[in-house]
Image (tube, rainbow, N blue to C red; front, side):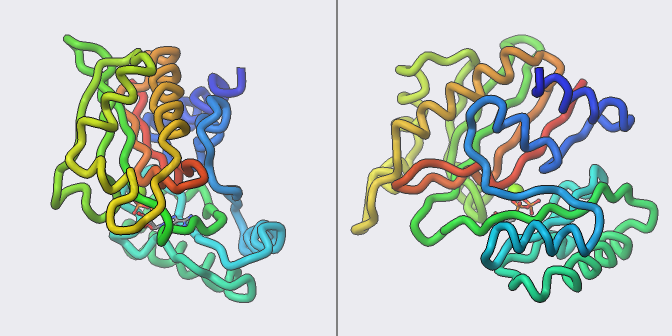
Length: 230
Ligand code: ADP
Ligand code: MG
């Protein structure tokens, strides 16, 4: 099916590392992703932004660039009229970082409302002994500082997925601490189970990270993706 094609197209490119160009893999498993597309020219980028009809986020797409924002490879809140120039800027920054980097294009993505959301991380590491270990925790800028996460062996039941939410110290943050609206917990639990299914179906995926997975009162949005094939 579609998911298999996406993984194979990565393998055909001779790269075992896939990024946001593989986000359709998440769509195929019903994990919500922001509207957008990966394009390979400034004009196409503008067309996608016009379709989105609002300021957009733009990201360099390259298997040689693991942490896009570290090299200036992510621009948020780009107005439509600046999309074409921003495309060129992102490519220049990638080339400055690594002259011979493979550049697949630029992702143009709908803005996600981070003010009303919590940035979480949802990932998987395949352990030779224990199998696929799902990781859930606080994401975004807090991920290294706070190291608040929990691990469970996939496949996980609904109860186990719920348990992962309960496990983290920041659980109250998801449940509406400090006057915030609680996030859509049911969708978050469902998303953990959907990723669990994905990594169970594809043993070739040895590592996967959705960071951030933005949880809001209305659902979740997988904003970034990185995965490694064996
Ligand atoms: P990387 O992790 O490779 O630097 P990300 O795609 O995770 O790239 O983007 C870096 C940060 O930019 C995110 O953690 C998030 O805070 C912000 N960001 C990325 N995409 C969006 C988006 N669609 N809407 C709002 N903020 C975003
Ligand atoms: Mg990220």
